[in-house]
Image (cartoon, rainbow, N blue to C red; front, side):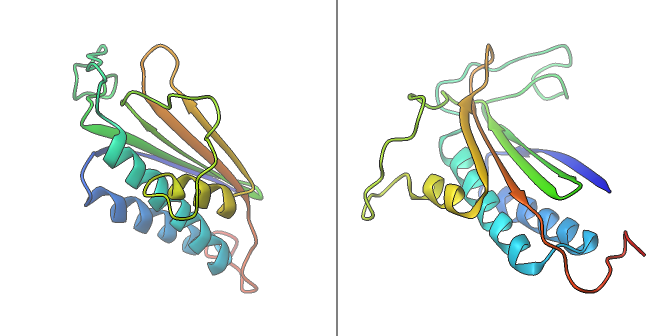
Amino acid sequence: MSIWWSLHLRREAASVPLARRLLLGTMETAGVDPDVSYELSVALTEACANAVEHGGAGAAPDTGPDGPDGPGGALSGAYRVTAYLDGETCRIEVADSGPGFPYAELPATPADAEHGRGMRLIEELSDHVRFGNRSGRGGAVVSFDKILKWKDAPSLLMA
C-alpha cells in the first residue's frame, strides 16, 4: 500500500493543525498504530511550526512558470508539507522558502534553550532525520522517516 499527499500552506499558525489533522486521518485510515501516529504528528507539528516562524525571512520570491502563487512558484509566505506512506515506512518532508539552515548540522541545544528544542524533538520521535537546505532556490528542508507499526484490527485499506 502506498499513500502520498502534499500541501502548499501559508505561513500562518492556523496551517499547523490542518497538516497535523490530515496526517492523523491518513494514519487512522491506513491502520497505523495510534502511538506511532501520535509521534509522527508531534514531529510534523514541530517542523511546521519552525517553517511558520522562520520559513520566509530573507528569501526572494520564486516566480516560477506559473507565477508566484501557482504550483511552480513559492512565495516567502508559504511552505510545503509532503507525506509518503509506502509499505512499512512513513516519510514526511517540510520545505520552506526562508534563508535555510546556517549550518550543516544542528548545534547542541541546552535543555533550557529558547529555540532549537523542536528539532531535537523531531530527532527523538523519528527513526531517521535530515535537516538541509533547498539547492538553488533557498529555504530549509526537514525530512524525517519512521518505521510504521500497525493496529491489531485490519485497516479500511486492507479490508
